[in-house]
Image (cartoon, rainbow, N blue to C red; front, side, top):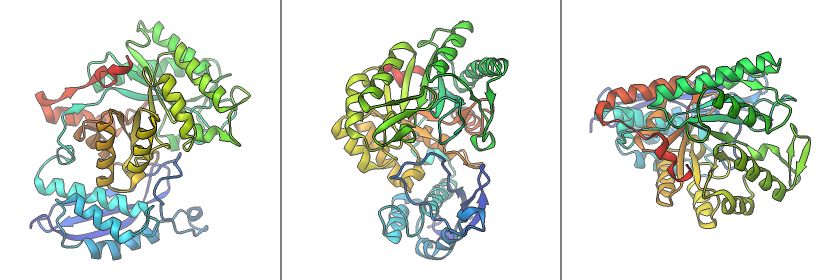
Length: 430
């Protein structure tokens, strides 16, 4: 077959945080090729695959990836050569069998995901189709969603910033991804002007965060009040034209069974913390909240879902780590009602597709997400459209970014077949 794998080669490249990562080139017998790199990630769940690092402290503080690269160029290349790249399931199954561990720790999750992605790209090339067409063939352009501010100990870690990790806005009444970005950008610019005026503008670790604002506030409620006021000042209606998507990254706030809110100078029990979350949702146009509780506090997630699940999208990222087993557990228990989709959290595209199927069958929302440190590759835009996920954490203000550009390219490619899902992706919560 023309789509048989001819060669695989891995190399070390550097991600947008300046750290080494694995890049894999795959060449097929028909001349088609695929190139992919292992994504990064700052805030990582404990159930994610193991990124194999060299541990040599004299080289990038032990973060070199020579071992993972060696595994690709020897064992993985030897096993996959001659296989049909068109059969993604067989390729990924071979990778899992070759690794032989539950968390990809022998070959390295970074080696495995880069190979899996490179194979999909090569196979799409052999078929002569766009990547999104190869990854499922969907035609839905996701609802406009963009980040406007960062906070929290993992991303910012500076006294005076709010405790939650990401503050995003949905542009609910936008006509498409470009229009939505323009609207959100206006709110971002107003927020930036306000924080500069108040001398509260901080940009710690700006390069690692791919741009964006890390503003200083006196409490965790103040950002919600400030942004809601800005939305109204621009002539929009909170909850109708704009809504919040908040990544709380609560595992980063959790210590000794309590939630530590530095910005509020408070330490809360689980019950008190859930009460605080409910109060915020009662007072502000919060549509989605991600990682609201500790990643292993299943009972807490169940209680929160009982209290808010009919009106707020409660999203598991560290809770589920794109893992089919953890997602099934959450569905059975009634924990959360949506899942973040990150292929490198589980290790292969085939496992990612399984998680998506499980989520959709249970009526759970699906939100694809990039990772901090990703390179040039907007593959998650293709995954989002191809799998008809409807939502994506891909766009940042002020930079816009590669994923927004790729969504617009995909929309152009689809022409009249493109369907902008808009607020319908969140209909049950609006």
